Every structure is written in structure tokens, then in C-alpha cells.
Image (cartoon, rainbow, N blue to C red; front, side):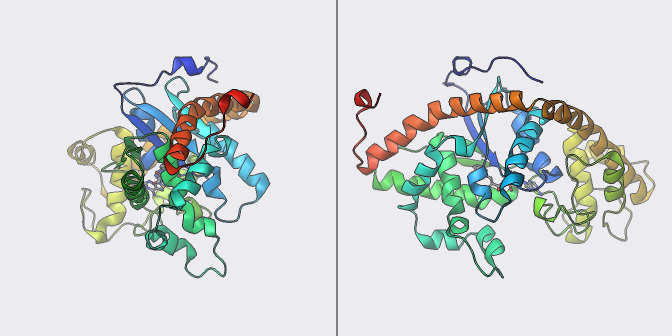
Length: 353
Ligand code: TYM
């Protein structure tokens, strides 16, 4: 367990490092797509950036959640992120609902966002189609996300491919606000890994690997899956009828490409180095065996740290409280600037004590 003090003073606002903001929902079990598309990149670049990572519980309740499960999964996700290597001395990790400025920013940004922009979002269309009832929160989801990013003046938003459209919307909202009021917001850039940005389901390489389908056997590799389970899922992965082990854009070969992509990100190698590793392989059976080994090897230390962290929930809560204190140091002044810009009378601080 990380016990080093994580004071606000230990994280002065960096003048040289670029500010990074990203988030993850505490719903469902985190899976390999989350790790390869997001968490791993957050951890690998921690030293070079000024980082804020957020567990977005406000986003999670845009669809129905069981309250006790949400509470449990929020802590479990925090432990998982620390276990993956988020270092509280280098990055701020916090729970979104601990910093009330997120909900306030969302409201103000709602008032400059045309509804048409939200109705066009692919994720909204996917999640709302066929539902009897859709919450206003689900439509508003990307505005809340824009608020997350803009409150921290983030330059970079490292996400998987599926979140690109939302980050682009955050750019549009920032630009619109800057035009209507004043130049308050940094216009953020999405940062998407070239390989790993879209990890596909093992049972169907045309569908993105997702927490929502992780109950379907053989679809996802959950980060807490036991070695046997991981091996079973990878060995059953859908491939094709050829037996050539190389990267390719051919949709027919998406299954093999997906497995090679996982191997590439986990071994930090180039495509040609990966292909060379498989030069002596005898068919897809060998490929799957080695991919399973690499995944198991990569997840083993994470799982070990995760269970250690979950043994001390009080310490975990303490780290999250400190994270929220640090986040507020940045988000609070920004929300005041937003309120000032739109014409609100700010409370007299000297009388509020
Ligand atoms: P969420 O919780 O769905 O996913 C967290 C991160 O994991 C990435 N990801 C994937 N990457 C590659 N392949 C996959 N199969 C895969 N599945 C998930 C996601 O792209 C994401 O980066 N709306 C966001 C959370 C959010 C946020 C933010 C992100 C809220 N506010 C502000 C960035 C900035 C979401 O639901 O991610």
C-alpha cells in the first residue's frame, strides 16, 4: 500500500508539463480494453505530465445502478487504478462527486450547448435505442464530461477511440463558450493510442470489448480474471481460416489483429518485433497460447497489488479524500471564473466564514 504523504504542496501547478485529464466509470468490471486503451497510457506518461484522473460516478448514474454496488465498485475501481500504477505522488486520483464544481460546470455548459449536438452523439444513440425510458442525464452525459475536462484546463485527454467524439464535443463547447463570454477555456485534444485504442471482443472481433458485455463468457478479459479464465477466453478467441500471423487492416482478419495488438501493447514492442516473435509459431494455437501468457503475466502484479489495497479500505478512502482536496484546488477557482463570466454575483468570501 502506498502510504507516502500526498499533500497539495507536493503537487504545485506545473508550468512546463502539459495538463492531462481523463476519467472512467465505476460501473461493471474493468476489462483489458480499459487497461490497454486508457489506464496503461495514463501510468506510462505520469512522469511527463500534470495528471488528473477521475472516477466518474455522476456519469455512472445516467443509467440505473444499484446504490450498494455502485459504492462498492467505486472503491474497487480506485484500488484497481492505484494497482495499475497510478501514483498518488505523481497524479491526482479522485471521485467526481467529491468535487461539486463538476455538477455546477455541467449546468453552466448546458446553457451554451445546443440539444442537436447531443442528439448526434453515437454513444447516446447506441444506449438509448430500444429503451422504454431514457434519462435526461444520458443525453446530457457529454456536457458533464466537457465540464470535467474544461474545469482542469486540460491540454490532453487520453482515451480509447470510443470517447473521441465526446472529447471533440468538449472542444466545440469550449470554443462556443470562449466566443460567447470570454477566452476562459483551454481547447483540449483527444490522445488516442494507435494500437490499443480499440480492443475488440474475443468472441466477436467486430464488437468493441466492453464492461457492459463482460458477463458474456469469452467476450472480455476482466482485469481480475484468474489465469485459467484468461487462458480459456483467449484460446477460444474467434480468428479466421488462414494461419498467417501478421498485423493487417483486413476486417476478415480482425481477430488475429486484435490478439497481436494486445501482445504489442503489453510487450511494448514495434509491429515488426511482434511479428518476429511469432516467426516460429505453428498456427493460431501458438499465437493464442503466447498472448494468454503475456496477458496473465501482465495482470499478475496488478491483481496482487489490487488485493493488498482492498485489504485497507480506510487508507484507500484517505487517498481519495486527499485526491479530492487537490482536485478542488484547481476546479474551484475555475468554476468561480465561469460564474463570473456568465454574470453571477459571487458570494462575498469575507462574510462566508
Ligand atoms: P469508460 O468508463 O467507458 O472507459 C474508460 C476508458 O477506457 C477506454 N476503453 C477502451 N479503450 C480501448 N478498447 C476498448 N475496448 C475500450 N473500452 C473502454 C475508454 O475509451 C475510456 O478512455 N465517458 C468516459 C468517462 C469520462 C471521461 C471524462 C473520459 C467521463 N469524463 C473526461 C475522459 C475525460 C467513459 O465512459 O469511459
